[in-house]
Structures are given as C-alpha cells and as structure tokens.
Length: 190
Image (cartoon, rainbow, N blue to C red; front, side, top):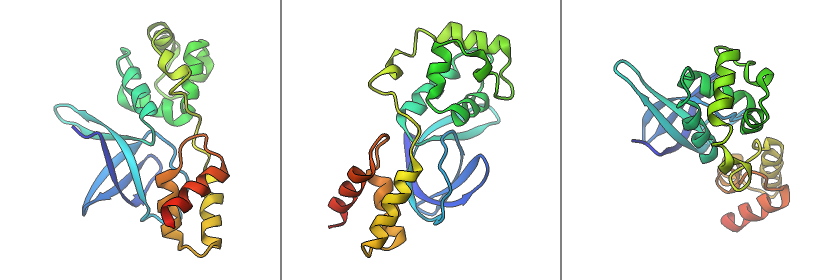
C-alpha cells in the first residue's frame, strides 16, 4: 500500500492530477484543493488512499494526513463511497468536522450523492468519533495567499521561481504566518 507519493505535477485537471514520480505518471483524484499551479513541475507530497476493488484501482490524494484520516472515517459510513467522501472533503475541507458535529445537514447535502438519509447517517455514526479532529489535528484550509507571498518574497531576494515554490511547499505548515514561512524557507536555502 502507498502512504504518500512525492513528485512533480505534470498535468492538472478539475478533480485529478498526473503526478510524475521517477518517470511514472500516477493519476490521483485530489481531495484537497491544490490551488492554481503556475509551474506544473513543482514537487509536491501527496498522502494517498488506494481504492482497490475487483475492477477499480483508484488513488485519492490529500495534502494533509488529517484529511486522509477523515476520508477513511467517511467511507466507513454505509452509503458513502470514495467519490462522495472526496467531494465532501474537497468542498468543505476539515470544516466538515464542524458540520457533522453540529448536525448541519444543509452543508452535508451540498454534495451530489449525499441526501438527507446519508447526511443523517454521517451525523449519527461519526458525531462521537471525530474528537481527534477537534483540537490537536484540526487544520484549517491551506492559505495559498501566504504561500504565494512567501514565494514572491523569495523571488524578490533573487531565488528562482521553481526553487522558491519547492522550498515553500516543503516548509509550509497549515496555519503558518508569512514571516515564519519565509524564515523556514530561508533556513533551507541559505
């Protein structure tokens, strides 16, 4: 089983990417928003869930382990398959935890394939099983503005765009501010 893949994004589509890992292209359905990638050859680390069935071999990708863990909990609920779980996470991120805990059916039913019955089932089965996401592993959506500003700051200091992007992607941790992202990047580059 694959834990994660690290490589260069060759192609980006609406809901999947082609990731080149040592000259092998993996088609990965993204459950995390990866933003607009200007330079599609930047290195990225993607946590992987393999959905292997009789006639299916799909890879689902996540930028954080928390999103992958949430995905695995979602697909345990009867009626929620990998595609619906991926759509829920892609639309709501980890705010989905709040929607389930607070029984917000209107937010849950925004995803195609999730009706009132499945929303009720998600709430009933997961409401008490999401404690781990409430505090220590609770991550907000990645702030691409901070990442973009950090990349631009490194470029203004004379670093190449690809080098700046690769470094910021490697050091950025959710909820980092601009200053700490730049400091961590410079520590690697210097």
